Length: 456
Image (cartoon, rainbow, N blue to C red; front, side, top):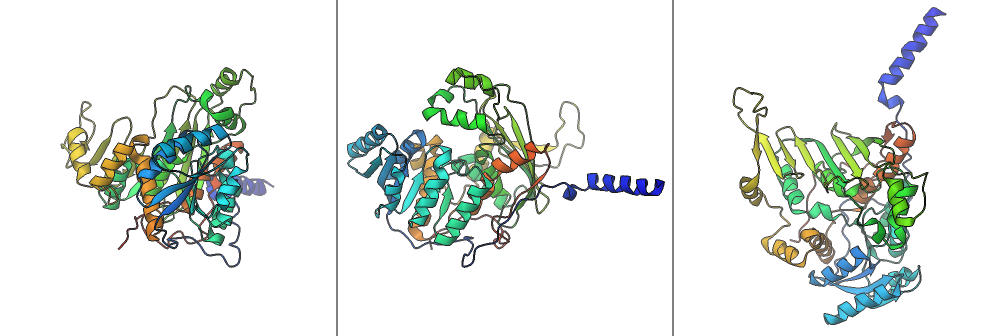
């Protein structure tokens, strides 16, 4: 009996020490018959891309303003559930000597836009709940789609987008503008050149005090979403750029996720201030932290905080075997130095810290191949979060013009967005590790290293 109890105790200890025993499994459905993956997919070139913009709030109206400046495309149609918004954007286009087909008034007005033969790409800027239904309808009707972030909120939605993109052979692009911010572009190029050695850890975040913004969302949709859902609801701004640097599904893949959050201290207060109603069952924690591991032993930390006065911060840190890049609170690059030979309490570091004018010079020497001086100047002139929105639009249209693979494909979309539900699953199970599904279904290492496509 004593020996049996000893064996049972040993088995319990072994299970506790073996994470594989405790990982919550997620389902990877088999690829439907006749479908092929979209790795490096090339569609037929479109010389002048007709773009239909759905949702004309802040993001959508900004897109309608920017897109006429992007070569190789035009705004073919606009759509909003509120007719006054649609009319306002049409008037602005007419003031610039342009026009577009208009669809508005009903919640399903987007269907007519998706069926419009003048539209090649449906650019979706609605509230989060409507992203996926519109995208699926658009692909089913022969359109490429681009979805604002977060593009999907559930695993089911991610798989629906992956399967529909594969079956229809239409691009499904996540509009993650932070992948085109100037620091991220340059740090990614440095990583690709091996300046930091091998990237082994990365951190990203969305820290943004939304006190000012909560009352300005249409029908309070964003605060309502936070009140009903737990987990990292907005991961991609911090997560997307670091996934590119870590070559996710381009030689490595995400395998396991663990999340932890605070209680909702501020959430119910914001809800009461905006709506006048109590919300005792507010779901979203004020701060959510998510850790991930990759197949090749790399680690990632992602944070979400829109409830506290913490200043805006996407973290963006790349930690390599021989160097480091960090954007917040101060942009800096750290590289190995020969060291001083002696470290004191006044000078604890042995690394070479590059910042200020020296950093500007270094970054100018390692420009991203997509960031020509002409494009940078035009992006800063047109604007959109300092120009990164314009660069994002430019690259997407350029790839469609030339029939090239997209910088961000449907697997990027699914991998970056699945953090929302996976973090919720982990939180609801006492921060247990959760398996990250392989949305490529085995094709994650066919391409080695992130790269941009260019016309020959």
